[in-house]
Length: 136
Image (tube, rainbow, N blue to C red; front, top):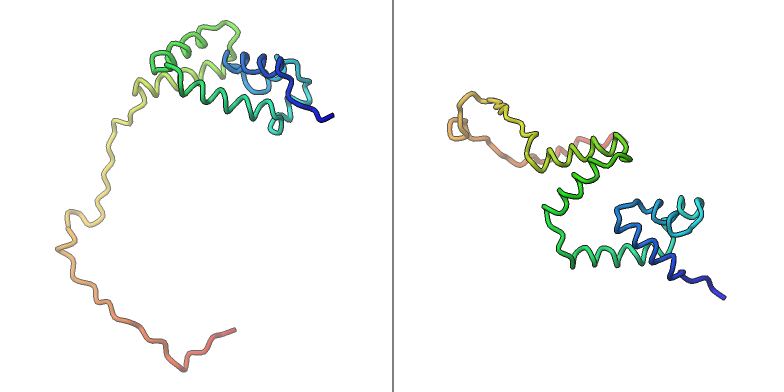
């Protein structure tokens, strides 16, 4: 008998992913072994569930306000790692346009000359000399 996808594990995996857990953590929460979770790219439950989750997200009412609210919740979570908090702050700062480069740098190569001030370039076809032989 071929091994199929366990529907109960599939449901638990989807729930974990909807809670914002990583693929590996979702697989662990669903009851998969650590070895299976570590090598999760080939698991059918991941492939099937990720497609379904992506369709659910596209069909849902996820908005910018909802995402910012979730980021704020995660930022205030006492169990969040400091690297996660730094990344959340980066995303929020980027969304709020806090990291604009206000300094404008201009480089003047021809110092005010336009292409009309430059002399025209003579383009002639170069014919190879028959005496020139390849070195090889």
